[in-house]
Length: 202
Length: 239
Ligand SMILES: [Zn+2]
Ligand SMILES: [Zn+2]
Image 1 (spheres, helix red, strand yellow):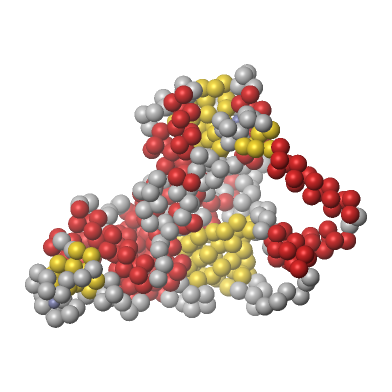
Image 2: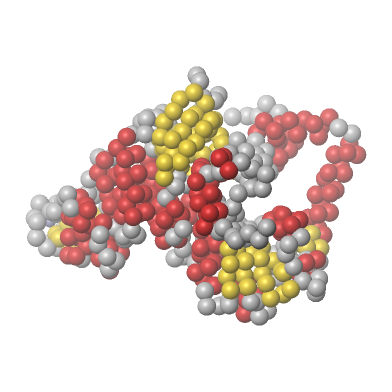
C-alpha cells in the first residue's frame, strides 16, 4: 500500500509512532502539529533530542541516566554504599527519591523478566549487579521492582539468586494507597497489607 | 452494543498510553476478549492487582468500537496467590497462558479450553507437580483434534517396545520404525497415564528424568502444533 502522505511526512509519522504510548492517531496529530509550528520551535525539539543523546549516557556503575561516566547519586559520597535499591528503570529512581526516605544507592536493571515476551534474566543488568555486590561490600539489597507479574517474577528470581551472597535481601511491601478506600482494595493487595500489619504506638 | 458479563482468566497485558493496559482475557462464553483497562497502572486504580495474569475473574465489559472492549468491572474469583509467589509455578502458568492465548479466538467461545486452563491453574496452585504443564498441553492438543498416539506404533500398530515419539506423525514408534525424539519406557508410561484416564495419578508424580522427558515432549508437541516457539518456556534456564 502506498502512503497518502509525502515521504518525509510519512517518515515523521512512522518515527513518532515508535515512541512508547504514541499510537498511529497520536503520531499523525503530533506530526501535523510539528509541521504547523514555527521552524525555530520544531528545531528546538530536534536539538534537545540530539543534545540529550550526545551528552546523556547510562551510569557505568548503576545504569541510571548520567552525564559523564557516573550518575549524580553514585558520585555523591554521602549516600550509603552498603544498601542497594534495585529498580527496573531510571524513572523508578525518581519515584523513590521523591519519598526522601532512602539514603542508599541504586541499581537499574533496565527492564524486568517477562516470560511471555521472552525477556530473560540475561537481558537485564544482573551480571553487573552481582559484580557490585562482590566489589562494594553490599549489606542489603532492596528489591524495588513493580508489583506486577514481570516485577514479581524479577524479584523472585533475584531473591533466589542473591541468597547467600548478600546478608540481607528485602522486598518492598505491598499495601494500600494512602487516601484510598479500603472497600476498593483488591483482595491480593489487602491480603498482603494484612500480613504486613504493624503494631501501632498511638 | 452495551454491557455484558462473563467470567474469565487474564492471559496477558500490554501497556497502553500513560496509565492504561490492554488485557487479553480468555472468557468462558465469549472466547478471547481484548479489553482496555483504564488507569490500571496507577497505584490507586480500582482494579488494583485484579487484572494481572493469571487471575480468575468475574467481569463486566463495555462494548467498545472495533475489536477492543472496555473493562467496566472486575471481581476476583481466585487470584492464585500460590502461583504468583512461586517462580517455578509462575513460569509454568505463563506457558499455559501463552498457549491458551495462541489457541483462543476472539468472538469464538471455547468452553473446553477454558475449563482445561482453569483446571490446570487450580492444579498448579494446589501443588507444583512437574506434569501439570505437560498434561495441560497434551490434553489441549487432544481437544484441538491432535491427540497423541502413545499406546502403539503409528506406522505398524505394534504395541511393544515403543522407543520414539515423532512430532510429524503425532505418536510413538517402534524400534523398526523409529524416528523423532527418543522415549524411555518410564516416560511412555506417564504419557499413557495422562492421556489414558489416569490424569489424577499423573499429576501427583514426583519429579524424575521421565517427567523431564514428558515435559520436553509435550512442549515440543505444542510448539509443533502452534508452528512457533513458546517464548516463556525455560526462560529461566537460558540465563
Ligand atoms: Zn549511578
Ligand atoms: Zn512400527
